[in-house]
Length: 345
Picture 1 (spheres, one colour):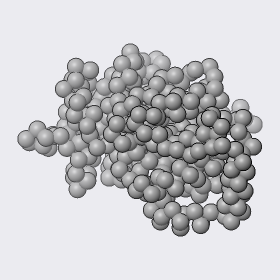
Picture 2: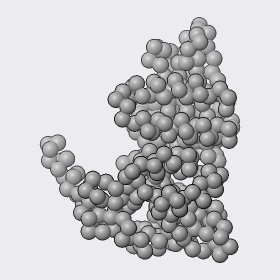
Picture 3: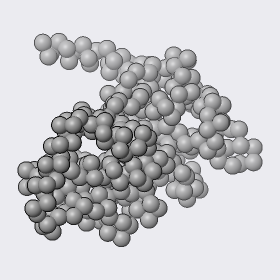
Picture 4: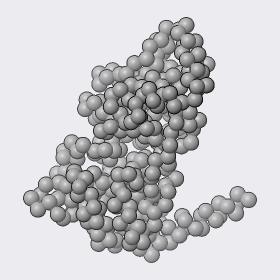
């Protein structure tokens, strides 16, 4: 097997169709989610493809080079933290070790092309890659993006019965209160999801991004939904009350995993616990559809604790490849935290 680095958009074009059809375990590594990011002037592709002697694709690492302030070139996963994970796609898991070894060798050989490396990797999915990078002195540490996970492999009944009796009783009371109003829970399909998604995005932006600093990310979610819906990879759940959308939950599926991107409710209906009711209804349907693991993203939130989440094993691998990169890593790891501690005292 051999590895090739695709460094220009022209290099990427022959792979676009193939990339679109890869059965990725992480929807945020899809070409649809990557395309707009790679059009940014400060970003250049650094996609490593691994092929066998016959030219068949064995692996793809969807990475890029982003030029930061001062001209520092950082090799990172496409869209950085917005992609959640930057693990390479590998066709045959049995080849993970030799492919991961080859990826590390390729990174070392190309060290003159980048100043610093920042990759968020899933410890369950890329253990050999993390271990191999660690052996050659690349620093890995727990990422500050600690995603919250829900294990549904035990089945819905066992999972739900594991929740505190007081919590289950509270939701039963909330549901009885809701019964007094005309309402319906639903899962939108490929033909009806757009109004649900649009309303979810509107509420999310108004509450957490009123200045529209993250418009590009929200557009990425729209693009990913448009690509995923006809392929059966989108879950758009809704709770409608008296003809109005009261709560929405948007997730993307890859295999037996679902990734929750947006979960919002209309504050006008907060007296009815619509967020919690929507969450429980959606989780039960996800379990019935074959989802075994829910990845709800990072952030410590009360509702995640109520739903019995645990921390996913996420590792941030970072290193300075050049003197400039080493200075950057030293600033991030040592100087900046110390300054924050001093200023915070």
